[in-house]
Image (cartoon, helix red, strand yellow):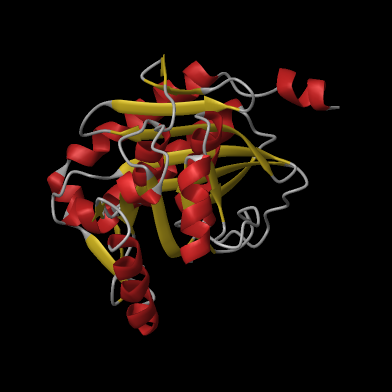
Length: 262
């Protein structure tokens, strides 16, 4: 059964080509300026909807048997016993609105609840991160690995602010202070998928954020794992594809310290 699933997986090069095409929409400032406010700090632009519509249609045309889970749609019908695309059309919508060029398209393929393929594209830099289960992680086709940083004390750590969870602001910044006091410095890019990629290629030594949705981390968790690290919940449990999670990611040495703090 496993071999049959693997043989029927989409061709990664085709998927990457479709994502590159969708990424061209990120530079359209007119569409980025057409904004629907879903919550006080939760936005969707025309870029989000156009990217999702294009990729949903294209992926369904080529692989009609695969279900589609996207940030900008109702996903109540998704059955994770089968195969599922998991898409964040713009991870970093607030960044896109402000022309702060740290946003991605994040796409994962899950089979029976396990992510087996992942692609994360940063259109502003042309960086394409990808991974397949058991085959390693790559940046523009070249292998990547997590850093060899041995401890939190010598690490650069990204900490997300969980802007949609303002009721948890005190906890968020207590955690941020606790990490800051124990590492070289902290960063925050505003795109969890990109921060997970930066962990995977060693630009960051760790990452933490509360309350992320599956489309924020589904692709990044595989890329980090295939690069030699791990992305888990703070208590060490696996990340869920069916509900939101807090996410801690790092190389295996730094991750143990992060989990201890969280």
